[in-house]
Image 1 (spheres, rainbow, N blue to C red):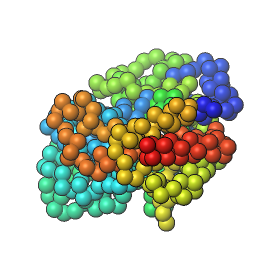
Image 2 (cartoon, rainbow, N blue to C red; image 1 turned 120 degrees about the horizontal axis):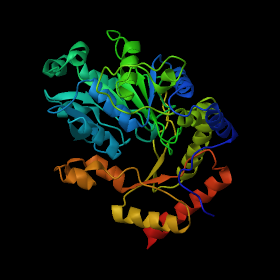
Image 3 (spheres, one colour; image 1 turned 30 degrees about the vertical axis):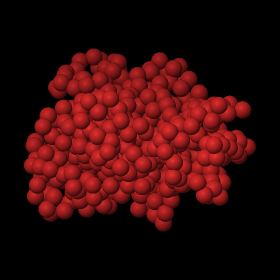
Length: 405
């Protein structure tokens, strides 16, 4: 029985919404993007969302708007996908990596220790869809001793008056922290709508704008939207209207807009996200947790507490007391049984681009310990309980064979 790792959720509603975009004669940025922005904002409980062509673009755009560039530092977890760090590097700044906690998320005390007068932002990552401790992170950046170190550069940083918190929420659409949904928790939050994410537009992302009350978030939306379209004062849809050809370019912007044909996929999904996607991923996640709770070798991932809830994006199972080599043997056995699994992620300091910049894995012991024992299991709505049962049997068998050899 062959089980893929993460196929997209495509049903008739998605097909019909995409077909309507194709038949409309308008497939780039237009009304469906605007609708997806509205639905994303409504879901997150906020007012202003800008859709872009990727989460990486979204992070870069916000860093640029914050005035972060050469000579600046941005603190990120060592345990994340490379895009978190590359977004920082692409605006000319330096990613400062810190270790994570046992729940895979950035350690606020490690963040505190890493802050210098060059620190302009912190980019926490909601690993696997489990929200970071945002209260603790805000307590750090609002600490008078930390604020006294802050050296602003530019109007935005001066107005904020402290280190910004820019959430990389690529995994956490639908998650809840302190009874508030992700998208509303940081100064600005960026979702990923990539093909493997809970909510997808094939490629894409969304910027959730929730800056403090001293800022005009509607104006920030307008500015960022302009910047995603080469700094042009009219998008192609507006220019295409009768008499709408004249435009100006008022900023040396970027090309980061989302097209309608992609937005259509996400629009169909978000309208029934809780029922058809989130609830079904939760079912699979809870099935695995019930089953593996009976195995003394299994360390189960965090997924809920009194006021927080996971998005159920990944199921990061850890095997207790094993080495990286043994973990790899377990994966090999699972793969031979035609169940696709993965590892999230290879820590940044193990990747050549960062090793060449002198980041060292030994500086992040919790990150390495988590990684060396982690196996990501398939989790998506199309997995019925019979398929889940098969996955559990295959994983148990692979672990047993490896540990008993």
